[in-house]
Length: 46
Image (cartoon, rainbow, N blue to C red; front, side, top):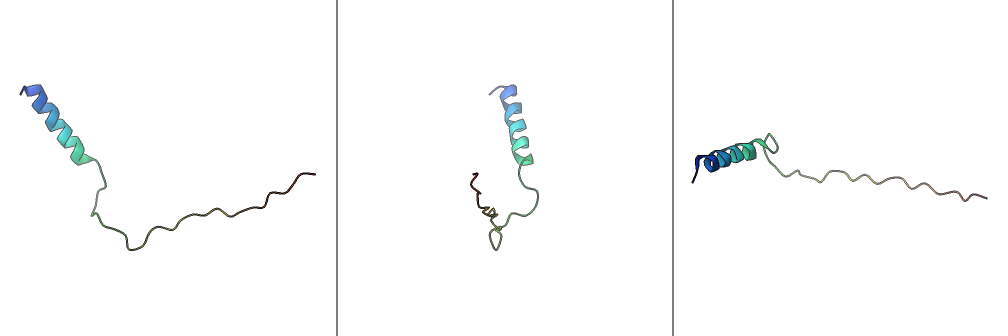
């Protein structure tokens, strides 16, 4: 394996470690609230 491939894989591994959420991973107790838009009646144009 050439040195370029080794360096590329090392760089790829470093980038993979740097992405994602910083902090403890956990499942929330309850799901987040879902936004439901208020229905507004459409007035007929006459």
